[in-house]
Structures are given as C-alpha cells and as structure tokens.
Image (cartoon, rainbow over all chains, first blue to last red; front, side):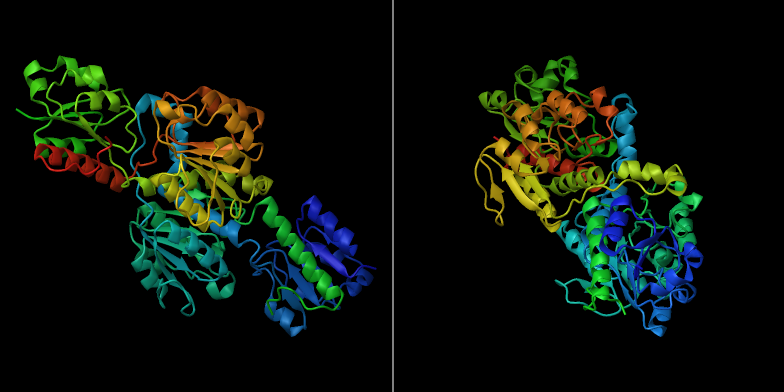
Length: 312
Length: 312
C-alpha cells in the first residue's frame, strides 16, 4: 500500500509523475481525506500538498503515521506548522525555484501600471490612436524611489531588478540586511513615507495579516503605487480599495487577493490598477521545477534522507 | 521679427515656452510653411521641429536664412540631414534624456508579452478566474537569451536592465562595443539564431529600412519574440506579420509601426502581440526634458554658442 498521498489540483503531468514515482493516491483537495479507507490513511507517511485550503490539526489527525507535508509553493500559510510541530511532522516548501518568475511579474506590473499599458493597448486596438491622437503622458518610472516590504529572497530578486532601472532602493524587514547600500527602515510607515513605489514581498500567514495597514497606505501618499506578489492577506484590502478609489494613492499592481480567485468587485472597475490571476510562479519551467522539488522532498523522506527544503 | 519658427503638434506648455523664450512663430506642421509671409520666412534662423512629416530641401529652401533645425526627439529621420549639410544648416536632436523611458517600455513590452498579462488581466476582470480557474502557464523569461539589435545608448540601457533579469546578452552593431562580456555578432541573422528575445534599438532612416528582414525574422524561430521601440521602418513589417500569423515566431511587443498612427489592421486581431501607441518617451518628465533640450539648442544658436547635441 502506498505511503504517499497527493492532495491538490495537480495538472495531469504532475499527477502522473507523483503516481509514477510513489504510486501515490491522489485527492483533489483535503475534504476527501475523511472518505479514504482507514487502512489507506494509516499507511500514509508523506503528503504532497498543493493549494490554498487549510491543512491543519484535523487533517493531520486523520493520518496517524504522517511524517511529512511537502508543500508545492514557497508560501505554506495553508499548512498549520504549529500543529505539524506538535505531531512531529516535518513541512517542506519549494523556495528559490520560483523567485525569478515572481520578481519578473512584480516588475512587469509596476511598469504596466506606471505606463498605463492596458489603456494604451486598447487605444491602439480600437483605432483611437489614428482617430484621436496620442495617449496622455504618463509618469517616469526609472530613477525613482522604490521600497521593498519584506527583504527575503524574492524581495531581493525584485530589488536587484529595480536597481538596474536606476531606482533608489529602500526596504523594511525584521532586521537590516547585507545590501549594496540600500536604505533600511525599521518602521513600515517610514518606508512608505520614503518611497513612491512599494513592492510587497512578505511571507503570508497570521503574523503578517494586514501588515500593509491603512497607516502604511496613507503614508505612501498620492504618488504612491503598491505592487503585491505575496499574499492578499498581507494588505488591508478595504483600506487599499478606499485609497485607490479616492486617489489617496495613485495605483496598484496586484497578483494576489483576499479570498481569491474571488476578487472584490470594487477592484474590477478601477483603471489605476493592474490585476493578475496569481500567476507569479505560473510558467511551465518554474511549475515543473516546483513539482520536482516537492517530489524530491517526498523521496528524501521515504528513503530516510535529509529533506531538501524543510521549514520546521 | 522673430528668428525662431516652431513647427509641430506641441502641447500647450511647450508651445507657450517657445513663444515666451523666443517669441516664436508656431505652425502645426511643415505644410503651413509656404503660406508664411516671405518677410517672416527670410528672418528665420532656427526651426524648432517636432513630428514625423518630412522636413527636407523643399522646406529648407523656403527659409533662406536657416542655420539650425532643432529636432524634438532622438530620432531625426524626418529631417533630411544631407540637404541640411548642403545648405550649411546644423541639426540637433534630444538624445539621452529619453533613454530610460524607452528602455523601460521595451522591458515592459517583453514582460507583458511573455507573461500574457493582457489576457490574464481580462481573465480577472471578466470573472473568468473565479468561474473557470487559472490561466494557462506561460514561459519563463528571466535566465533566457536576449539580443540587442543596435547597441547605441538606448540599446545599452535596455541591455543593462535585461542583465538584472539574468539574461544572457548578445548584440549586433556596426562594430564591437565595450560591454561586460556580452556576445557580439557581426551578422544580424547570426544574432537572431543565437537568441529567443530580440530588442530592436536601431536608428531609423533609409540606411536601416527593413534591416530586420524576413531572413532575420525566420532565424529567430518559433520561440522568438521581437520587441521594437525604434522605428516601424526598421522591420520588414509584412514579413513580421506573416511570421506572427503563422507561428514562425512566438510574438512581438511593438511601440512603433510603419505608417503610424495608422496600424496595419492585421496586427489588431493578433493575441501574441503587445501593441503600444509610440509612447516610448511619453512621460511628463521626459517630454519636458526633451522640450527643454530643444529650446537650449535654439538658444545656443541664437546667441552664437556651441550647440548642445548636434548630429551633423
């Protein structure tokens, strides 16, 4: 009987790879767990997890032999790590392999918002350019001030890109980092006051809920733009919507939302935002690398080797 | 009587600045030249030029005292420099001040095309994300191979940005340049063979017409994407359209078109292209800097000082 249970909306290639490698039993989501035979559940030592549904004490207790939850994705806020710790269960994630894609999308949303490229593209495609002349002038982006909220590996990859756009880089993190002379702010509000463009690259989860608060948003000011590629939960989304609607800030580029894939309908009528469907890591190459790293963690656990990317 | 004639579709601020500084006479375009009084024409020593209408021997001969054509823009292909030389007329342009904006837009079109951000945004705004799930996976951009066609100042600014995306940089120019180890190709077809993403940053004009030829486009291949921020004329646009329609290349990001603002309607139905209305330098800050540099050249001419940015 298999020791591996794959849970989540895997694509057919990744699902097949999990079955090939581990003879995995596959569930579309954690709600199917209780319906598995108790014999099957008792034999499971590793879960290959994918998705944003909560996986906590209740799910873990249905798998009494569980030793590993191998998450697909760098953000593992769906998994209750404290509950895992209490049961001697290890958790792994898939860091680093997705940094480039996520940083690319962050910079892309910044550029697309600042240069109003969606409206400009519609201007060409509708024939308005020929009929009515040029689009309004936009704002210059290069040579401005950018703030990174959360200087982890992805934050650093965003900052390295922005530095090539001649941006003056500021950041906030729990502690000062080794950087090429970038400006550290211990207080997130002070970061917001110092910059026009704020890139949010925080870890998700309860500790960072609404970390980008109404006060941070207000401090950014009317020239401010927020780019978020981390989790919807890290921003006070109601305060963000109020600020976007009133002009208290200039705009936003958002790949993540509270309650996604449902998106607050107030976003949908705004012209000063770029809205993307959580596609930060969504490339063929990177998703394959994430799936491989997840399987490598499962394989390490099954043969008693050291986990590659443990988080607890 | 004024010595300065401003020709082109200036915005109200730039027009007012030209009148304030030089008591300039203003025409919307060169066709109005012949209707000016001969006395006025005879007094003109400097033209502040803006736009893409041709300004050549016929226009120059209507201004017998002309000493300077100060172009607004880095590309001066509308101005017949040989005709100017023959008449002892100097030409200036507005280089450098727009490099950042144009390079920003080049990188932006690359990212927006590769990550299919227009379709992804429509997926969010239509509600399809919640109803039908994620968008298809796209291609990874960072860590790929990029080719710069024309390594002038703007090409270099594009390459410097792409280097921060961990791209392997290749380039073609008339001669090898001092670069951080980038790969020079003397032959444009060889450049196209070596890379997936080609950024066209050539100077416009007759010498570069269709320089990105059908052969260059074919050599780029089915994973190839062309980004053009220079002039529509530098690409064989019919060959490009054929390649985009057939899948001979993967896509394009275009800010410039043959015959713009009219755009070949074959572009308008393509989903694998990003289309922008020649907004490369179109920011408030940069257009103001371009207008200032143009006026500084006119002022230098009028007081007999050295021109700031002569091209002949």
